[in-house]
Length: 447
Image (cartoon, rainbow, N blue to C red; front, side):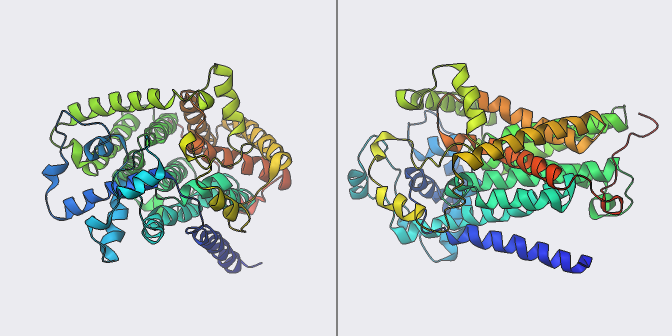
């Protein structure tokens, strides 16, 4: 097939996957946190009115207040909900109140804390669209590793993964976190190829170092702004950039450029968090303490709390491909959305229900992919090193999760998908033709 037809087929494939993701927006079962993030979208109206001082950190912070929520949550999703609210002519008064998890659903409905289904579906579009756009960077990541033999299965696994679809389609933080994570890693890989390969063309190659590393910093900052756990991918990407830079130029320059990217990331994150502007240190300290207290409170649920390190290790193995979707975490939601779950699971847009057998196959492929990347990394493949650093950082952060809340493992699913696609691509296409092979990453004579 001519190259131009292949490119058309690539675009058609990606568009089809994006349409599939978008198609399930309204049928996805509801979650109480969606209502909370909709309530937080009032901040967008406050900013639009130029009253950012109303969002500033002002202790003491009341539990479960808007100030508390804006300090312990990411900002991208709520901001985009507010934007789409304005675009569709809705007002801040039509947003729901803060959902009280300690109270029953009917009580919250009477208090105005539960939105109408029409409003909820509108609020879901930003997160769903960002999830759909994630197909593009996951495809590019696979392409950089092993061309179409890895890009196609990686994009397919991402778009059909039932856990990614369930959480990405909801009006919550996960859609923005996944897209920012994948964009950060795909930019990092493109940066490594531009700086460490023999290729003399390409957009990234033509960009000056300040733009390359500045772009990496912007995307890393967006990842942290999407959700605080985005700090993991930000640190992993900057570490990988530094390691790659030092293999080429063992001087102060790689450290200087990586530090520059880190500063840009902090500036971007701070710019998107007006609650921190008046007292960054005080607000950050409050956020750390509040997040720790919240996690401790969530861990009091005995049925979902891990009691041993082995359970955490086991979760790292089983969560990517061996665990069915978890529709809710609170026991108070048992039975509330059974009809929605049944309708969603009986539809054709809930992803690939691969079952335990295919789940074992995918987990095995991920293990094979991990081994092949380790082999490539030992043979001076800096792209493989970048993926391994990302994977390692995500695994270590997953070990810190004290309870069985599936959406907390979404960052782990992304490198697991790349690893599974790498294993499949290596088995199906044993050798990439020389004329189609990506430029080999090599060390400079100075290194």
